[in-house]
Image (cartoon, one colour):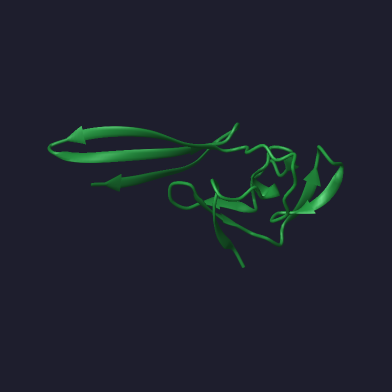
Length: 99
């Protein structure tokens, strides 16, 4: 069962650049810095050389996600904020919010 986590508050292996999961199959974006994590996932940590679970932590953590870049557009008095979460290879999510 997926759990919702805030990337600014946790340092789980699934979000670390050393955790070998090139398809990012165990994480999914939600809103802002909140992401879904599948804690049952296991992949190899290339820094430690062992298999670790998605919700494990360690002191070698380096976040592989550029948390967000905001782009504001204004049209006819409506502000549209586009937040893009970017990974080294692909764009994972585009969330549109209106004020």
